Amino acid sequence: MGIKERQERDREAVSRAILDAARDLFVTEGYQNVSIRKIAERIEYSPAAIYGYFPSKDDIFFALAEEGFRLLGDPGSEPRRAQLEKLPPVDRVHANFWRMYEFSREQPQYFALMFLDRSVPRISREYERFAFGVAVMRLSERLAPGENADHLASDVLNLTLAGLKSGIILQSRTADCPMERPVADAQAS
Image 1 (cartoon, rainbow, N blue to C red):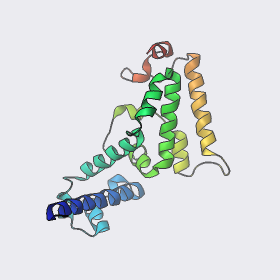
Image 2 (cartoon, rainbow, N blue to C red):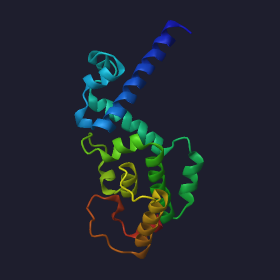
Image 3 (cartoon, helix red, strand yellow):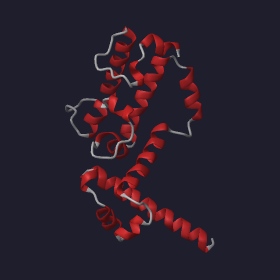
Image 4 (cartoon, one colour):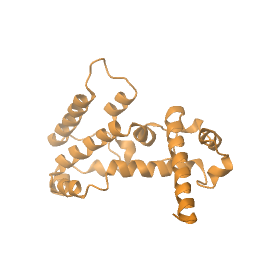
């Protein structure tokens, strides 16, 4: 291995250490309570060295959010995507919501960072419309003793879909929400 390859590998390792330390700190202490200095102390580097990799704390967060969305989307799963496209719209909604819940179990730190911490920079308005209640209850250890989070998540999802199938009109609609289309329109797509 040449010097250039080793330097690149070392740079990637430091970048990974920064991201891992920042993710842990953001989740345990809250985004607002973490500084570049605190991240630097965690990995035993100077704050100036961190700035050589990421221009700001926000840039570190966005790099972590990008990783999280890649993990959530499971980009290597082209067959899964093709299967989803063949499903009726309500079944697609079910599959996508269940994937979100599974993501909260598989990657709790990314989930917490991306969806629970209100102090992080804004990612996208669409995600504010969804309540990830069961995942939040599980991660914050607010389930009743003996309560099965998987069963509860499945029940919540099935009840939500039953409501959508019934054609009820949502009272909390906003003008720019993609979920606003009536169920009949969504089934036609």
